[in-house]
Length: 192
Image 1 (cartoon, helix red, strand yellow):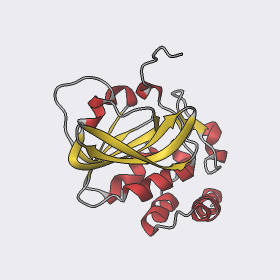
Image 2: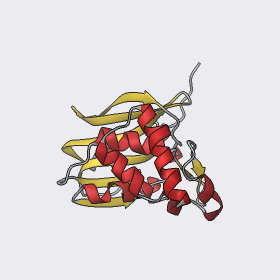
Image 3: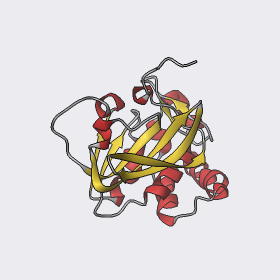
Image 4: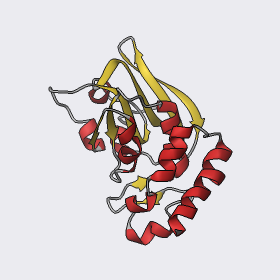
């Protein structure tokens, strides 16, 4: 009962007040028990408006990131989805009943070179990235879309993207705190 109250409070005081009011998003955020996706010591703060450290050294983003990402993704019943999962499985569980299929991979697998690749109509990245590497871009269907966080100069924003000529073009939408996935960092280059 305590977690149900916290979940309801998260919806009313974090999501709705930030403009997330899509019924399907609120239903999923209100149904999936976020406390089951964090370490046992963090269950009591699972619904706080903060990211939570995971046992694998990564972080579960604040609830607003997931709500906004789902709202922008607008998953459809016929979507095949790839989730680049930071290790919690939370985003996978949120999207699973909304689409036809969901596969999840770790960030290091999303940037690894491989010849054989299945493509997806929707890619969701559970974190902020500096770039969409070619290895991940090739997994996106020609008319597919990607929803991710992007990181630039220590600022993270939610972004959506689609194929544009030869690459995936990202459109930044809203500045929010999103844990960064270092596997997607651009190579460091010399500058003045």
